[in-house]
Structures are given as C-alpha cells and as structure tokens.
Image (cartoon, rainbow, N blue to C red; front, side, top):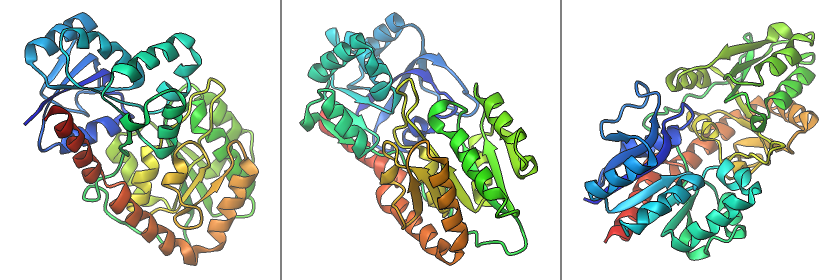
Length: 353
C-alpha cells in the first residue's frame, strides 16, 4: 500500500469538499496530510495531519518516507518542488481554478509553472476545459489528465420534486459571495421573472464580501419578499436545501481579476439529487450541464438570457423528470466520486510501482 503525502496550504476551507471526499473514499493508499494551516477540523476530521511551516513539512515528509507527493493547487505544487531536491519521489499537482486563471496573470507564477511542468510527474485538471488551458500554459500533453470532482451516489439520494401546483416554486443558489459566482446576475434574472410568476421564490445560501451589494439589489426591487438569504450553511444543511428546491442555478462568470471556476461541485451534487440546472457557458460547466438534457445554459453576465431560461423551465414542467433522470445518470457514470477516487488511486499505484 503506497504512502502518499497530501500537501496543501489549508486543510480545509469549507468549500473544499472536493479534496476531502475523495480522501475519505481511498481504499488502497495510506495518506498523510501535510498543510500550512488546519481549518474546520470538526467538519473535516482526519487523524493523520501534520501542520507547520514549509521547512517543518519538508523535514516531516523526508522522515515519514512518503512515496509520492500530491499537491493541491498549482502554487502548492510549486512549493513542493523544493521537497524533490532531497526526496526524489513522483509529484502530482491538482488544479482547480484560480491557480490556472487568476494567478497566471503574474509572470513570476507563469515562470514557476513552467518549472513545475518540467519536473512534475502528473497534472490533474478538474475539467476537460481546464486540461486544454493547462496545455496552453505549457504543460506536456502526456502528463495532463482529468479527474473530476464528483458526488457519491450513495450519499446523494435521488429525490425528484415535481412542479408544485399550489406551493411556491423554489430556485436555489449556493456559494461564496464572490464575483465569479455571478449571483448578481442570478438575482437580476429572478427579479425579471418574479412579476410573471408570483409563486416563484429564490433562496440563496452563502456569505462573503459581496453580501451588501446582493442584498441591496433585492431590497431595491418590488419582490423583496420572494428572495431569502439563508446565510452560511454546513454541507449537510445545504444538501437538505437542494432536496427542498425545484431548480438549482449557478450563474458563474469570469471575474475582472481573471478568477474563474473549475467545475462547481454544487452542480454535480444538485444533478445527483435530480434537480434541473440553470447555469452559464463558463469554464467546465457545460461538461455537467448538457443543454436541453439536464439543464439550460446562458452566456456569462446575461441576466436576460438567464431569465428566459427560467421561463423555459417553468413553462415545461413535464420535462423535469427527463432532466432529473438524465442528470442522475450523468453523475453515476461520469461524475461518480467513487469511480473518480479509484481513478486517482490508479495513478498513485502506477507512479509508485
């Protein structure tokens, strides 16, 4: 059984279930976490953690005799290059979004990535779109693979919600209140349709710096009572909200800083549960939202197109079962977290053989 070093900056931020959940499902590896900071330990319990400075972690990795280092995020992979001088083991680096799109505006980081691409053993993208973007940055094609984030079908039961004849239709958005989530456009799209559909409701889970702007957008409208900000939720709590809602919306955009999504895990989880999806043609999103099959896509920053798609879904509730079943099958076949974790373990085994 190979001994793996999971190396990251912080273990873990609340949104980083995409790192924790595959770790939880590993069956054929011994993984020790090495991180600069420990966060949210009560939510992400893990016994084998070493926390400290890069100097401390470098020595710990040497002493522990790991056979492979798996760095999460490109900038952590760059840091891990320093370990290879004394411990020549394979290095895998996983990329997720800002490390491909925002940080690469810095020429120093681009230079560091070129060094990483020369010395690293394998580079993992979270979407086919990101794989192409890594190739454009200079990563060698034979060393770049895709391992999707995913949902464990056993953990996300299929719960179809039909169109409610005498109850409100609930749309849900969930994520950090940062620009790339595009929530301002989701809110505007909702407000454009609320007059036509007085039984429509929008719930928003999340917190962050853009909260005042988002709340002001709602409060300045005539439909304040139809929008509810639920605040931050635990992962389990937000899953319960997905089960209650009828439509899940993720209107992501490319931020002015260049920050972009990889492929939002919330869309995979909502598809697993059986929700029709509303989203944008952003980054890897079209790989989980198949136009007209399990959801509808709009251009980025286009509230009118998003609103038109809301109307399309509300006008054809007889198609919701098709959308729900297609999305569930897609997760079970392509975004099944157990299959993706096994794929990752196969890479570990191949590189440590």
